[in-house]
Image 1 (cartoon, rainbow, N blue to C red):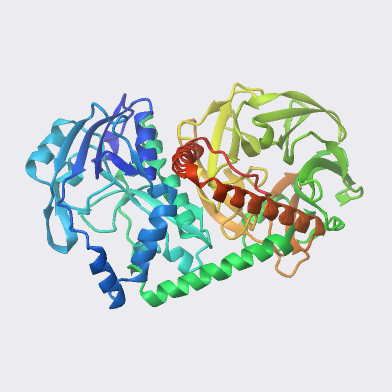
Image 2 (spheres, rainbow, N blue to C red):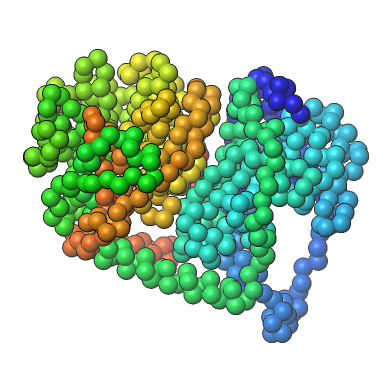
Length: 606
């Protein structure tokens, strides 16, 4: 396939390689996305018709167990993971797939666990004029099947292909304490583990639950075939013809019994530490000023001196600083969070001649939690877009008098739980980036564009435009340096707000988005706030930052205790209502799939 052959198409014809019409929930979500996308037609189902294996009897299983022939991993996976992982729960898709041409196929086994397809199935695929085949079943494919569709066979690799090959998927990241779990959507080639990368992303590794870690990766990556189809429909997606990857990552297998026991011990220890941390270890943020322009942070070797505000009392913290300079006065807006009320409000302080002179005072206070008071200037007027995702939408405030008088100027985006909305101009357009309060926190980046600040705002063609817990969530003001656009983002892979990832934007249009991480800006481990940093914003020729340390806050402890008591009451009530379990489980699964599609979830400070 030549690069020049990639052009905008009116439709994408898709074929699915699957086990049947009852699919795991993550695969069902993927198919629903394809079926509901304009311009995408699922035209052919190729169902694996391999002979069924005989299951061992109960007596045979017990005999193997007594002789030590059954690995502990197999018992754990079949008894716990398959029951608890929502992504693996079976979903009947018969009604949704009704009317789609179906072929049952039994592949021919080749050497090295490879499989080739019979000629009649290949002819059927070619006659269907498919643009791509999505592999959700079958083994290692080879032969004509790889070229039977225009854009080949697409397949998921649940793991960072540069670090992990083999399986189990998303497991060894927990064993090796890898902060992020990577996933890849690739176009298969004749060489094993040498596909063409179509899309890749990273999710925060859950340290205490393999089913939860698996769910995040499987549900999160399920959206990528739709995103890639949209790119191709728009005449983009040139990565389908990129060079294959070349990885020498080690190949992993199911853990031995000793490795599995070690894993269980680590999970138990992490659960205890997380519970203790919830009660006794609380974030305290503070705001600082660096007397250097923001572009100096592009240099990873630069050393910056910080003028910190006085440390707040233990029940409060200050974070998310954004500023504006008028004459010799610098006005800075921050999030002022109080552990006693579990609510943030927008406060302001002022400085003169580059020095902080006044303590923060309330300026924008609403009934909902507010944070990230992003400042925008247009035609001499000052606007603020505070994050208030609990109220829904992105709301714009205009300054009547800095810093204490503001009026509501409009709503830019309706009914979207936007978090950390960041607005900037680039090549004649206004752009708005944010994440959503969702079940995969800190990972999905969304984009909108408009000709005017007040809109109308149009969603990017490939939303969400990025999935990377290391560098998606906005973390400050984008800026241009040496003709290139840079975007600060939060690295939440190790901990919430652990560092700033500085991204260089390589392509930004209504149909395409691409950026790369240039460097990570980490807190000074010997400074007063060594545990995190998640805002980097420009104010004139100076830069505002924030920093985090861990403390014990009595108000935070009381909140954790009340929450634990409520959870205990819910658990007891749930035990008393077991007779409704089957209906509740089905509804929970349906709601979970819907949540992953709409992005509903918890506040990041919760």
